[in-house]
Picture 1 (spheres, rainbow, N blue to C red):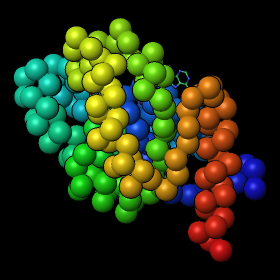
Picture 2: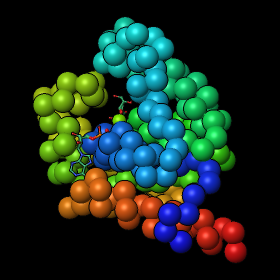
Picture 3: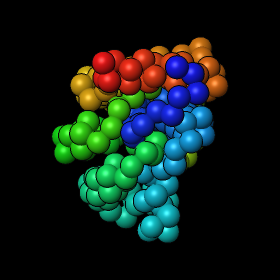
Length: 181
Ligand SMILES: Nc1ncnc2c1ncn2[C@@H]1O[C@H](COP(=O)(O)OP(=O)(O)O)[C@@H](O)[C@H]1O
Ligand SMILES: O=C(O)C1=C[C@@H](OP(=O)(O)O)[C@@H](O)[C@H](O)C1
Ligand SMILES: [Mg+2]
């Protein structure tokens, strides 16, 4: 039913460069929901950029902040939430996302992820000599976790942000209609 107001929360998961932040914003506009991004919210609250948090507190320090933020933001109602790529590593995050809304896995190939994140200094885990290999390693560990937590998987290769948003709307309407039935 096009134009129907879809109830509930939509949580976006997937690798760095999958498009969670970008597609999350357009999906929120299209559904009339509030948009949140856990990384941006952590930065707004601390006044410190994510790479600097990694430098000062290590990945563990960042993960603790991320878990607290995801618990808080996923408890809101009628929101679109873009998580950080590593959020699914913590079983508590996976549980709270599953419990509080529809989880959408934005999937992309290692090549596309590399193209979209190359030269971006805001992703501390990719500041290595061989970022493509790093993406491959992270993808191997995380792909099963994204699949485990997701209600929906959508391939983002060769699709524009607008096309993805429209495709997601159709899938979410279908999912919602089936849940009602
Ligand atoms: N479907 C897409 N096709 C091409 N480029 C994309 C697509 N989705 C996102 N991008 C681009 O990839 C980069 C990373 O997107 P971003 O939303 O920050 O991903 P994430 O939050 O998952 O790390 C941005 O420059 C964005 O414009
Ligand atoms: O994959 C990861 O572990 C991370 C992804 C980043 O978010 P995006 O997936 O939005 O780039 C950010 O949370 C941090 O740099 C760690
Ligand atoms: Mg992001």
